[in-house]
Image 1 (cartoon, rainbow, N blue to C red):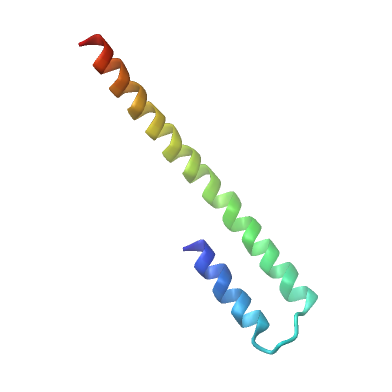
Image 2: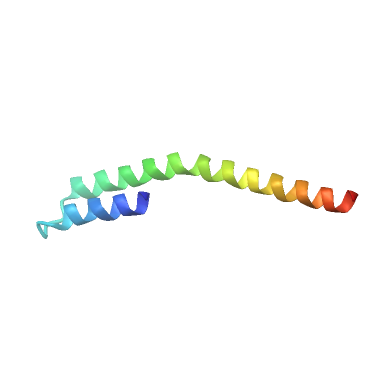
Length: 63
């Protein structure tokens, strides 16, 4: 979803065929914010995934 938002914003920026430095800086800031917000979510999901795998392996070994 974040990639789609960034693509949409880039299309708006490029609509007048003039790339303004302020627009580019704003887009870079938005991209940075989205990355910072998304990273903890990914880490949390990865941690849950590894925990599930670990528990599954332990259960299969101890049977």
